[in-house]
Amino acid sequence: MNVYDSEQIAKGLKALEYHLTSSLETADLIIVNTCAIRAKAEQKAFSFLGRLAAFKKKKPDLIIGMGGCVAQQEGKKILKRLPHLDLVFGTHAIGRLPMHIQRIEKEKCRIVDIEMSEALVEFGSTVTLKPTGKATSFVTIMQGCDNYCTYCVVPYVRGREKSRNPENIIQEIQNLVKSGVREVTLLGQNVNSYGQKEKLCSFPELLQETNKIKGLLRIRFTTSHPKDLSEDLILAFKDIEKLCKHIHLPIQTGSNRILKKMNRKYTRESYLQKIERLRHICPDIAITSDIIVGFPGETEADFKETLDLIKTVEYDNLFSFKYSDRPNAASACFPSKISKQEKNDRLQRLLELQEYFTLKKNKALVGSDQSILIEGSSKKHKAVNADHEWQWMGRTSTNRIVNFSQTNDDTSFNKVPIGQLIKVRIEKAFSHSLWAKPIRIEQKSVGLKGEESYAA
Image (cartoon, rainbow, N blue to C red):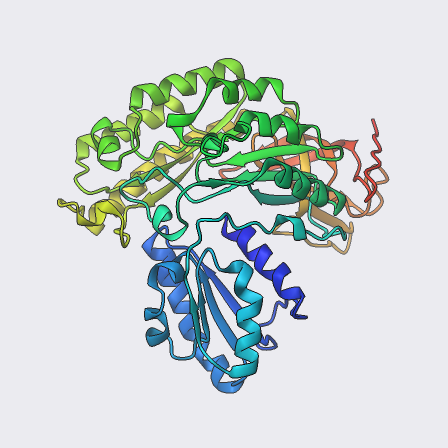
């Protein structure tokens, strides 16, 4: 969500003739968009902001702003902590950012804006129709959260749950497609509850409407709350053509006792029933999840239940974190905190177990043919002098990263294949990626007018 918010910040500042730069040294304005979900992310943000004091000293007119969840959480206290900071703006103040920047330019003042609004923040209609060079994009469909998990700060820094109007969402996606985007990821703290409070269409119905958009090749979404995973959404993986075969379904812990302390409102047993149903409807679906280790009061027996659940589900991948107290979250006051050493140990054991299953599933794909959407150059993108070989990366429908090479004399592919859906044969498997050989183009890039061209 912070990626999406950062894109909106950049678009809003274009009206003031600010444009993105890759150089801090040449910047006239630096905005740090922060995340408060874990203590480590907050610490990194303050550390980076602290280093910007040297830039301000060399360039006094440089404007430095801090936005996002940490800004919302800490407010005016940040100005005392960081004397070189000009602006603190919260999660509901993105639309007011240009106004604040103009005032700072004119008055050389310092501003704090953490006012939260009952109205939903809507800025999707400002999307440019010019080519972006990106094949994928995020689209926020709702803001805030009503679940109040005891470890989470989201309801306090992003507010209560509010869903965007479906017509605005569809219009934003259509604009993105016209600018060259071929895959969208619909975002929400709990997409499963989209539209329920406002009596809008359901989330599966929104997916069906998104599926009709000409030129869009793939749809993803995150995050799903297990308690609200409906039968209609499960069936969507069979019925909606463009919906990718991947679901991120956070479990957080395999212990019913800890799930209750977390206020997750489902049980291990009900979660496993939904996993079974998903795999019955879509046998090759990839399932990923979040795990928190070291929640206050978590015993070794509780942790072993988590390990057992991982063995039962055999996730395609996991995002695992050590518990940390967060301001305002109820669990910050819970007794029986777990030591740092014990959390480190448990996390390592969990990661080693999951790596086995991830590699096992990746190896099972060797020799298979997979469709991937090319997103851009790989991390090892290079031209080899002898072969003029270029390395690219894309993702399977199941969200696996696939790297492959292409030579300049390969007439089967465009010189820059970003946004193409191609068929590849998997040749090698690694813990975090696959290596493949291109077979053929399945779908060429779509032009600004939406023309589609296919090749066998």
